[in-house]
Image (cartoon, rainbow over all chains, first blue to last red; front, side, top):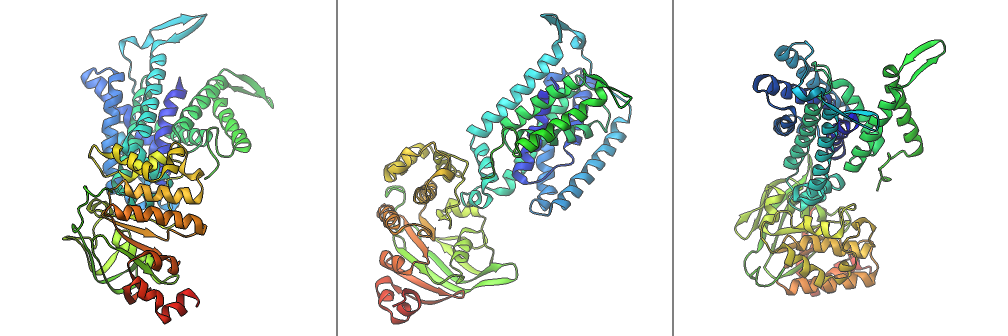
Length: 285
Length: 244
């Protein structure tokens, strides 16, 4: 279930990385903002969290577009350290603003149906988790169709291959960069909205998801929708299996929740050794 | 790309005292040239003379220091590339610069990026009629095509923008003579449909045989110009570029 959300988050991260060549260290913070937008709408207007998904997407898209146009565009062709500094600084700023606005208290989004579940073949499945996975898969599929079919989607893919040639075809590069960054932020917002149903919220909740987005991206192969989806699902499954484990190593008792990151990262290492371009990745053309 | 859509006499290109370059490095010094509608003009010169830089300035990807580039009554000096393409000045870049992971069809559609009319589909068909080889390769990733096929895609992509003036940079580079002849045949057809052509070539012989008029660029300055046939007979051109 978590894998689906991870796929959405990683897709946004992957788009920005693959096309703008920016490793956006504020991506986890964008996820946090998406979750808080959902919480705020739920608390103030009793809006169903699933209905908040498109709203969080739209708000974060607008935020991302403006941010890119005004700020990030300055570092598109800059050395990677400059992009790290800028996005990390941005992340710190946003986390602290969130602390001021929403305080550091842990929040939760719990609609009336959050405890409902059903049982299939002896396995209990909560409805919210199933719906979350469905929504995540739907978002990923929509994104894929849009990138393949639409004119702007095609321009985004073309720009990943040759920016100069795209410009000669009449593509307004700064605009399409901003759209791409907006989409990255929007997908983070949507992922955050979906997360709010199963995780408790606090302003620093984004960090682990930044790391996971990074891992999923590398795992699946950079810059492809299929890569993010497969990477996200694989990571999610590995993580949830790992959390069931209960082992004793060198006299230390380790429970699953402490192990899941270790095992997920070991899987990443194995994949990188066996297939350096990621599961769905192609060799550099 | 069809005669009806681009009436001849609509736009001539007038470049006056153009200075352009990269940052502090000036490459072009007071370049002036004129291209009448319906002409085929060659721009020749040795490596590093500034030929590609001139095309870059015309396309808005190299910054213009001073001077003017008038296309019809539209000033293109300093304009953004999308406006220049919209005005009808379209470049086929050196090295083809295809979107290697996109199919031939998608590459052609990228050429029509700025168009909002309903004839894009009909133009795709016209391109395929002109370049039947591409029909067989239509859904192939462009990066997998041979050099000659790729150059055809690059030309077709530019045609999809409905150019009035086609700028072609080093079309013959890296291609076998038989393929170059084939491509020149295609250019002749495009020209016959009313498209003005400015071609940049290192292969001076080929360019002067194909074009009606030519300019010779040396270290960023136009040093000679005239009917291509005359330049072909010019002793200094023969010595410098044709090795005769």
